[in-house]
Image (cartoon, rainbow, N blue to C red; front, side):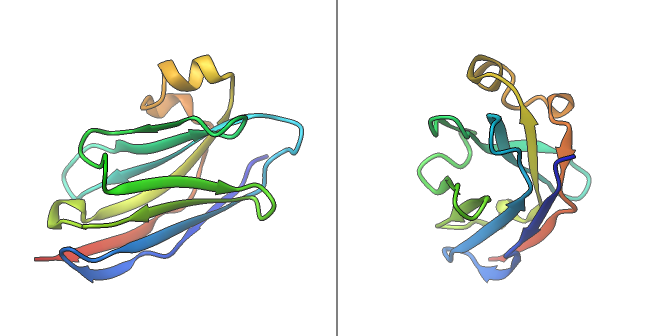
Length: 129
C-alpha cells in the first residue's frame, strides 16, 4: 500500500517561490508514475507535473512549463515540486499521486486522475497578487 504525505505549502506573493515535498512509501523494486495535481476552488483537479521513477522522464502541463520543476530523491523516497515565478492562478490545493506502471503508460496517461491508485491528503498553496 503506497502512502503519500505532502508538505511545503503556504502563502507567497506573486513572483515568489515554494517547494513542495511528497514523502512516499514505494516498493524499491517497482517503477512508478508520480505526479502533482492541483485543484482550485470550483475547478476540476488538473495535472501539473509528473515523473517516471525509472529513469526520471518528466512531463509538464503547458501552464507551468518553465516555472515548475519536478524531481525525485530516491534515497529519501521523496518527490519534489519546485515552483518559481508563482502567479495568483497557481493558488490551489496541491496533491501528490502515484501509480505503479510502465513508462509508456505514464507518458500516455499522465493526467488521467483515474490512473493513479494512491493520493496524498494535499497541501494548500496561496499566491497573493
